[in-house]
Amino acid sequence: MSTSPSVPVLDCAGMPCPQPVLQCKQCVDNGSPAAFEVVVDNDAARENVTRYLGTRGYAVRAEARDGRWRLTARHQDAAPAAPGPQDAAPRPDAAPAPAAAGEHKVCVFLPSEFVGSGDDALGAKLMVAFLGTLPELGEELWRLVLVNGAVRMTVPGHPAFEKLSALADAGVSILVCGTCLDFFGLLERKAVGQTTNMLDVVTSLQLATKVVRV
Image: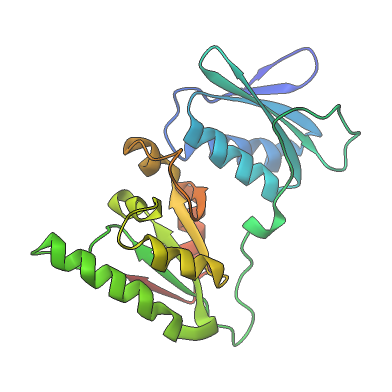
């Protein structure tokens, strides 16, 4: 961590997921600074850092500079700064809470856009049927985590997109791997779910009372 004349600066450019988020977590846990800056070099890291800091009570202003993003984070308890064009308010709903006694939280982990292996066309049809049947779990259905090829389902026109959107509209949390979206060139095309990072994925699996892997 380097230091500017006024606030700490975390240079996370070039770091793979989830290192930028983990660097921010360490900074907040060790000192809870009223304000600091984070430098990242891709949109996935920008979204992940912004989302994480929102759960810790920070508003984030993003500014593009020479192919990198400079994120200025200011805690909501600190003195307000002048608003910027890309300020992001904190999102306390993004931080999941442990299940209460007697509560069941089912997390569905999807590493593919297909169910099973053998024939992709069949696997795609099975995925549409699977997503369409998940509401039968009722209030126990808490969260879907999409990684690798499963992130393709978040793009309009995909056979499973409407089923996935219906789950989101019903209040099911859907986390979508930002690194995976970036790899497939889909960051700007994702139309459902929240871009996430591996720290959120691991935390979701930890907090769930049951994990279903397809």
